[in-house]
Each structure stands twice: as structure tokens, then as C-alpha cells.
Image 1: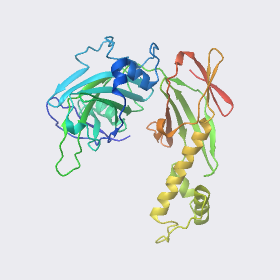
Image 2: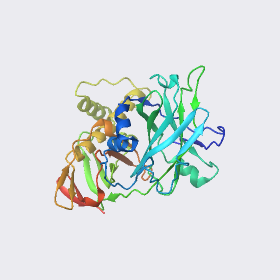
Image 3: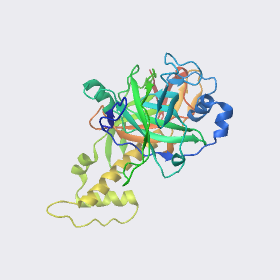
Image 4: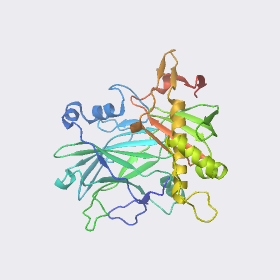
Length: 360
């Protein structure tokens, strides 16, 4: 979790503290959104039914803003107007849908990136600064664009989300890394963090990484409406390698991992491997844990209170990620986004590896 914050600007930028994630442009059918309305279209994107009530989801286009007025859900700057259409808080993930209008010709070009930055209101306030520092860099994706309007999905992830807090987001269009950057910067908009219930297992599960011959422990499975997160305590690659990365075992591991002959370079001094080969071993080790957890949850089943079962398919790359946990020295959090969303009040337990674990 990087320190990807900057001071909240009122009229101009006063302090930069972060680098932003580059936006991947994805065009979608704006005509469908115009027919459905943005509220219905966003529900469709998230996998929320038209009349489904999901805690953590707020539709600011419906006139029912849960205490947030239309005025606070819209900001105006020189470059245009930004409107908060909807937000979805699920577990450790915040998704905000923002409309930008009017748009410029330069903003239609696919090679001109958008980015989203998180803006700390008062970096001198330790608690607020640490709250923003707990976030991964925000990710932005264009979901729809027409001649007059662009709708972006901004996603931010933190293990320290606090309901009742506000998350300040600034949209930026343009690439600062060019020789003569042309950048459009919009006024910061506030996204309220609403309550998002989460169910947890109360038992730990031992898991073995066969290829690396390493043990780990699933310390938590957290189920929210839009995510399933599996926290695994495991040795870091450097610790594991200090035990097993002697020449023969390291070479054997890499050949099993790659499925072909592996010829390491000649190291200097008394090292077993060159820095490049060592990095390759570390990356392979991390990937074996990635595959181990994917295999573990590949046959995961959600048991509902009415006796029915939802069998979850093996996670696909587009809805999966894993990062180092901020709550444990040797932990990784493996996260899957659920679409359609889960109805938590209907869930009783979760099944992994043939064992059923109650959720509470």
C-alpha cells in the first residue's frame, strides 16, 4: 500500500504526494445508458438487480442521496463539471462512478490518459494522512463516452476503510511525463464511505504449496456483497529462498515451475545465484502461491440459508488481484470481485476443500 496521497486543493494544487494509475480506455454503448438512465446502467455494470437493495451501494441519480445533497455530489472547475453518479463500498473496495462534461476533443483520443488521485484534506493531521496512505493507487476506467460526456469508474482499495469518512478524488486528464504536458485537472469531489457489512470465517485453514514445498495458513475469508477476500499468511519469497535456494534445489524448483531446462548464470562472490536469477526465483515462488490459492478456491461454494448452494467458478484474471496485507507481516490478500453481487443476509456458510465454514 503506497503513499499515494496529496493535499486537497481548494483553488490550486499545493502539494503533490502521489503518482496515479493510467487509465485503460474502454468504450461502451452510450445509447443503452441513455435509455436505461445512469442509475440502471451502473447497476448493470456492478451486477446489482434493478430493484435489489444492497448495503454500500448509493445511487446519486435517483434523488435519494442518503444525506448527501445534489450540490455536494457535483463540482465545477475551469475544465468542466464532475458529477458523482453512484458509489459502491464493498469490503475493502470503493467504486465511484463519475461523469465529466463537457469534454474536449483531446479527451476523446485514446492515447490521452485519464487518472484519479486521492487528495488528503490535511496531511499534517496524522490520522487523516495515515487513512489515505493505506490506499493502493486509484484505478480509473472509462465506462462510456459520447460527444458531450465521459463516465469513469474509479476504484480504490484499502484495508482501513472507515464508514462515515469521506474519500476525496481528483480526476486528471493528460500525461505529465511528456516534454510539454497538457493536463486538465478537475476540482476534487467527495465520495462518502457508507456502511458495508462483511461476513468472516472464525476458523483457520492450513494450506500447502506443493511446488514450493511451503506451508501457509488461511487466517480469514471475508465475504462482502461485491468481493471475496482470502488472507493467507505465508513466508515471503526472500525468507523461503534463504532456506531452500541452494543451487541444486533452486534449479530443480525452477525447472518444475517452467517445465523446461533452466540454466542459471554464474554468480559473483559466494552467492548461489545472480541477482537476475534470484528475482526470477522470487517471482516464481509468488506465482506458485497465487496458483495454490486459486486452486483452493476454485471449487468454493456459498451455502444459503434456504439450503441452496452457489458454486463459484475458478477466478478469472479480470476480477482477481492480490496484494501484501497491511495487517500481517507475512500475509497476502487474494481478492475476487463478485458479479452479480451476493446477498449477505441470505448467506449461511462457505465451503472450501470439502469443509464447510460458518460465516458471521
